[in-house]
Image (cartoon, rainbow, N blue to C red; front, top):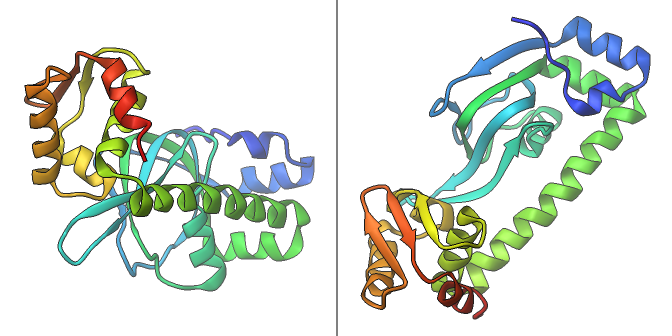
Length: 218
């Protein structure tokens, strides 16, 4: 398999780029593949070139809530934290859309961070950007009504327009940190109001303006 360099490596100093090309191993993973579970040790640092990995928490009751996604050109801040701190992964990660990337062994990545300011700054950037996104996510979960968050999420999936959105109620529940039954009740209420239509695996948005009004409540 041909090694494809992540964007930030292509713009790195020549010596670091050469070192990455020498050490990194290309990989590909299919959609649905479990990558890491809670408490598992990270063997290396993975840099995603294409595709997306969903990182999420799983409660004792089995409910899930998405923390963030790692997409093309990105890396997982929790993986970096676990490698540098030599601790277990605190969440779960699953391939959402087929992934292509490059992986570097954990000891090598720790050595790079200790020796090169370029890699230290990269880790600091990961922490800053992900912390902001996770705090925003937690703010929504804790302080925003579920109805508003569901309307906002459906509008994001549809590009803000009326039309079909291919998503299951289970997926919506996992994304929003709720139970499928609660999502089902909300969608049923919206269907009765003529805001959406429902079929298996699809939510048809009929009144995007009504959803925007719901999304703005908080």
